[in-house]
Image 1: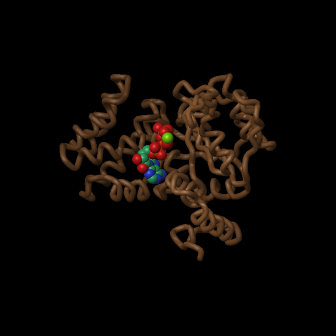
Image 2: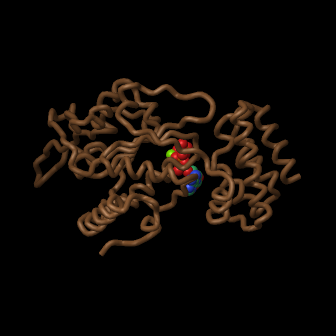
Amino acid sequence: MIVTDRWSDSKLPAPLLKQILEKREFLRHSLDAESLALIGEDAYQSPDDHVLEDAIVALALGKNVLLKGPTGSGKTRLAETLSYLFGYPLHSVNCSVDLDAEGLIGFKTLEVLQGQSQVKFVDGPIVKAMTRGHWLYIDEVNMAKPETLPLINGVLDHRRTITNPFTGEVIRAKEGFRVIAAVNIGYVGTVPMNEALKNRFVVVDVPYLAGDKLLQLLKERSHLSADDQLRRFVRLAAELQEQIRSGQLSDEAASVRALLDACDLAAYMAPLRAVRRAIADKLDDEREQALVNNLAETYFG
Ligand SMILES: Nc1ncnc2c1ncn2[C@@H]1O[C@H](COP(=O)(O)OP(=O)(O)OP(=O)(O)O)[C@@H](O)[C@H]1O
Ligand SMILES: [Mg+2]
């Protein structure tokens, strides 16, 4: 039986959707409990028809997808939602922490079996995803250290193989394996990314939600229920985005994550204080903090 949910009403080409849903149904019955637990949640709201659908088409065609967007714009949520739609478990690595080859590929350890100690290799996320035909989410891929880049490039290559530097074993990706990577790139300034790496992806821009879609998200996901206040927060968000575009504020000022926090707090405290704690005080620059607080005054004062 093919599961029907919100995807069935989407504007995706019917044959593509049928193929995705049939495969998902197959996976649902063949995966073990540990793998099923790695499937994401269907929580992403697309700012327009293209963000979600273009990512779906690219992945269905066997491409790897690079999600590009400012902090708190929903990149991780989108990757989880794609994992949900396709039914593939999503293994994750984050390049911003001190990620080395061990963190990606795995490491050797000693295991005692019936009194005998043996060397055992513990698979890292890349090896797990490749050998099981699962998906891999690489967060902040632009922060990868130069020495780990060749490993990541190898995984993305059309050959879809890497050589495990610790065992010498050649690892081949099983059918179904895909990579979704994310980079934090705001409206102002871009973080440079290794050309060879960038070349191996289809790029999907992930902008902040705005207008009615943002209103709906805040309504559904925050503790705040007063419609009038929610609308003020949406207008404040639009103004913050405008100030970012004109270079007056840094990107994180319009993070939807911070906005959700502000709405949550505003359910229990004065909205101006909620904005200060959830948005303004997180900014490093005092001038920016004052700007956010002043803007909030115009909507909530
Ligand atoms: N379009 C969206 N749909 C659903 N939830 C969203 C959306 N945008 C932001 N959010 C909410 O905002 C929060 C941050 O989203 P998420 O963690 O996916 O952002 P991100 O782009 O991965 O951020 P970062 O770059 O900091 O990792 C989450 O709580 C998420 O639910
Ligand atoms: Mg993220």
